[in-house]
Structures are given as structure tokens and as C-alpha cells.
Image (cartoon, rainbow, N blue to C red; front, side, top):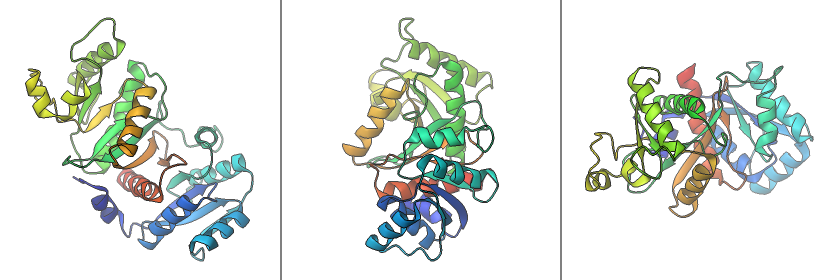
Length: 301
């Protein structure tokens, strides 16, 4: 099982998978893709404004001689072309560049050239937090706004696939809530109880689901014992299922900006991994995300 992004990157060195980058005229994107190419993780096709790509690459010292460039100044059309490259089997992963997430997702979901596969597409963020001996997976902080219990079951399934790709064969999924007991007035606790039962019935597989649990009892065995929680998986969470997007988004950015946690992110549920990071994310985060997507693509091949 992989425990850090250093281990993840080492595991995909020399994979030489193919990545299609939509609207690639961005400094951090080009730095990350260049590093991934240097490590032999990917071969890259850059789709976007060729003049801008070349100008930026020259300014930051990124060589483009080993990358394919598809000139398309229009951002929406660049997304379509980048996705179609993956749809046609000419790349294994599509990556968002300097473009709104909604624009690339429209291309991913396009009935003609898109990549939709599973009933629900969801975002999985992976964090390497100081003081933890394992990677933490957070879902969904960027895609599903207010998922119902059916959607949450699919979100868990998507996240479990990512954990499996990184060698965690039986991840613990914790349904995060504000309290540890089922409260009829708190829908998240009702959903948590239902998801636990579905896991016990074998309807959600490849993991152990527990909850409802608050964050402290999800990640700290000491906190769980102090509160007298008897669930043997309390405090051992690998995957943290948030109740709705605002909770996930705040948690994601708190870990990133306040805890200085290293992270990666991607959308799961398509026929191929979709690398989606914030435009404000660093080139390190984008490199981690490329490595994550390649690990998932290789595992699913």
C-alpha cells in the first residue's frame, strides 16, 4: 500500500502512459507535465493556443520538442479535442488546464465524444498530511453538490477504486457527520446508517463502511476511545465521505492552506481518469494528480 506521494510517483515512473491536456497554456500545468515527462510517467499532447503555449514554455524553460501540440485557441473546442483524443484511444488520461471545470466536464459528458461510464462522476482528493501514517481520501469536495444516499453509494465506489489502485485493498470508509448517533433531523446520519447497512449486505464492496462519525472520531483512535465509541474502525478512516460539497470544499482547502498538506485530485467515474485541479493549485499538486491518474489508469487497464 502506498503511503505518500513520493511512493506514488516512484510507482509510476517509466509508465509512459499518454496524457491529453486541455487548454495547456498555463505555467503550473506546463511545469507539472514537463516533470511527468522527464520522469517517464507520461507522453503529452497539449491542446490549446499554440502561440501562448510556446511563449509560456520559453519563459519558464520547458522544452516542447518531445510533446505534441494541437493548436486550438478556443477553450471549449480545446476541451472537446482533448477529450476526443482520449475517447479515440490515443491517450489514457485527460487533464484540465487553465479552463473552468464546467467547460471540460461538458466535453467529458458529451454523448458523442465524451467519456461518461459510471452513473455518477465524483471528485476524489488524496492528501498526505503530516502526522498520519497513511494517505487520506476525501470525497466529494468538487463535483456532487448535495448527493442523496444512492449517489453517495456510487461516490464511495468511485473512491474505493482509487484506493485499490494505490494498493489499499480494504479501505475504511467513514461517513462524516456532526454527531456519532443517528438523528432523524440530520439527513447525513440517516444516510450513514443506510450506507453501513448496504455494506454489510454486500451492496457496497471492496471496503468497510462506518458511521455516522464526526471528524475527530474518524481519524483519531484516541478520540474515539475517549467518547466511548465501540466501532472497531473508528479512528482508522482511509476514505472520508463528506455530506455535501460545501463541507468537502472547506475541508479540502483547510488541509491545503492551513495544514499545508500535499494533495492530488481527479474525477472518477469516466471511462478514463480526468485530472481536475484548481487553477490556483501548484505545479507540485498537478504533478501529484497526474501520477494519481496514471496509477488509476494502469490499475484499470
